[in-house]
Amino acid sequence: MDYNTQQEKLILPEYGRCVQKMIEKVKAIPDKTKRTEQIQAVIQVMAQVNPQVRDTVDYRRKLWDHMYMIAGYDIDVDSPFPVPSPEEVASRPEPIPIEKTPIQATCYGRNIENMISLIAARPDDEVKREMIRMLALYMRQQYLIWNKDSVADETIFADMEKLSGGRLKVPEGMQLGPVTDANLSRPGVRKQEDGGFGKKKNKNKKRKRINN
Image (cartoon, rainbow, N blue to C red; front, side, top):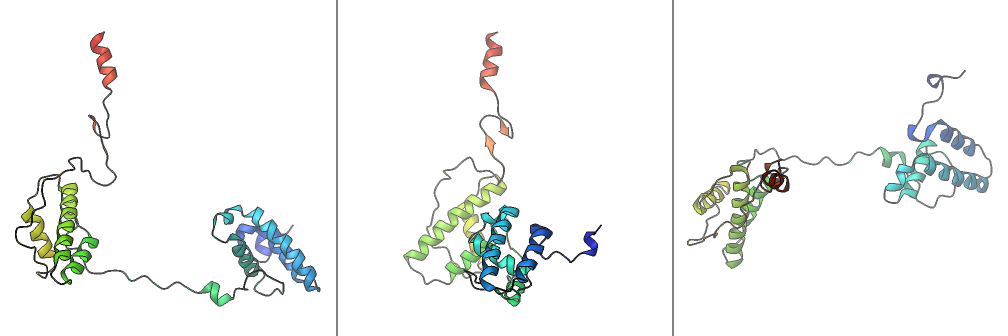
């Protein structure tokens, strides 16, 4: 009996040992035309063995790339796609830089801080004034979501100037108007009608008991 520990290591375990052995046998075929015909049949088997790959974009090319990986990039066949190289497959993506500057106000978040910085760098004009007002309205909404209380326009304007480091000055006489959405709730928490958070009263059931 042959144990898996005694056999050659699987390159891509999701395709199994049978597919790996079929590719090795195709590599040994001397005629290139015959090799190409047989490897196309192996590709079809790979699509059946690992059907999840069909959910990916351009899955046919991915199957051919996997075949080359299993073959050790050492198989001469006519491929409908460019032949991948080991360096290309093993290459690591560029690391995404992480913002290390701490967030000044968690109820607003980093995106609002970035928007304030961009608006502060604009020249003073009517467009900038409208951008300040729209951002202030959004900041007020975020403030009410997390604090569940009323907030004065002056508080929002003061926060804007503070987050900008004094670079952004709110125009005099600016007003945000009344709060129109009174059903603000934190993300992931939905207040159901008449039942509070996570509860809903059954009005019909209550009326039935009264009538009885």
